[in-house]
Image 1 (spheres, each protein chain N blue to C red):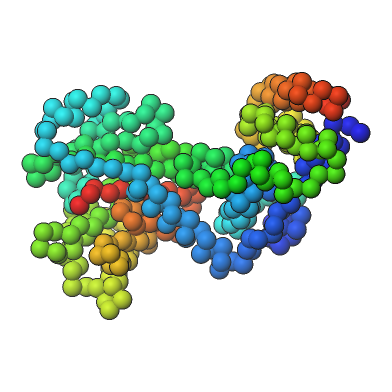
Image 2 (cartoon, chains in turn purple, yellow; image 1 turned 90 degrees about the vertical axis):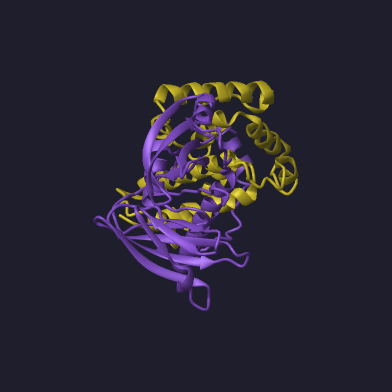
Length: 227
Length: 160
């Protein structure tokens, strides 16, 4: 018996259980669930420290730093980017100041190409994705606000009896639809779907539907700011 | 060309399972990889040249997805490879020894050995699937064989 025959004999004991589905609707559902899980997992991996140490704090972080200008909470914002690990596996810390308060944002994400390869996203890609993504916030009075680029919209009274609010937003030549869901625990999550223009991003427990374009990579973003 | 998913599943599900298991060493993870691989085939708009092109693409995707599984910190790994081996039926004790020894090889040697001896791929084809240089594949194959020869002694004669 040759080595090849020995090898095949040894590994011929492995068999798939066949417990997978080839039904299109079920596969689509699995794909959607997988995306939500990825977004949720990325969000869990993110952590934020809100501090008031001012600019000196960012200078103390160390590591490789760069500055990026991006949209955050409805404002064009300059963020200091610190790479958490040299290989990018640990994501990035975005430090920025808004309304006199210095905040930190932990971000990370992966992109998948059509061969199933995962690649950790760069700070620029993450910033671009987050800039294109809407953002949700609840203020001290319990009002629910949606931010999209420079737009700020109060959607508090727009939820239906199922706790869902749908709206369409446009910035330049890009139009997205948002479906915001009020969760059982009082939080909010949303799904952003690109209707025209480039791909979008997602925030919080949100996720992104693939746009109707020829972009082959699918991206996931997770972000939480502790509010 | 495109083939139907049912056709592909009938032809390749065990090959994909073996390739995925070879990397993630967990049956449930390998099953998930098969599902994800077929979903990827369903969603890709890629046109294939022939059946062999589809087969190689499916194996490449399954390998990449299995590698992704091993990199995730929340991977399940509920059953150890040792426990899983007890559920398998081997034709001979030598087959069990070979299986166990291969599973103990470093991943980078394991998958090259698997593609060569189980899938019958040539070095150039393995290089294409794994996106490695041919010399890199040859080196891994050679080191993997040397480890098998050392561990298995007479049970692995290195006849190529």
